[in-house]
Image (cartoon, rainbow, N blue to C red; front, side, top):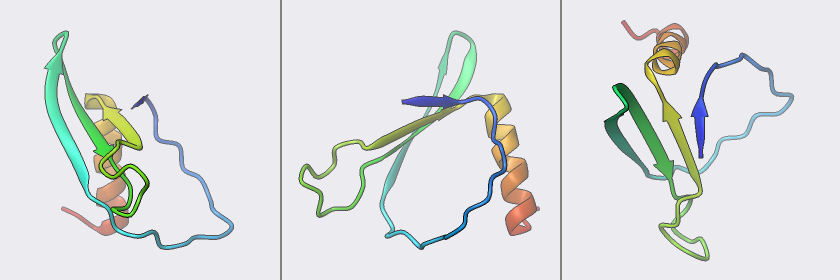
Length: 77
């Protein structure tokens, strides 16, 4: 599991479109801090279906960074 602190822009030499998967999110508060956790389980045809493969946490600062990135890239208002 990782709690994201800072989003850093990067570049890819080759981009590929991944298969869609489901994500489960958990919104909670711990030690007076609001956190959002996103878990993904990968594709349904995995050896162990529904086993969590990635887990990311955002706090208020990293969520604000991601919100700004999403607004800029996708033109959200």
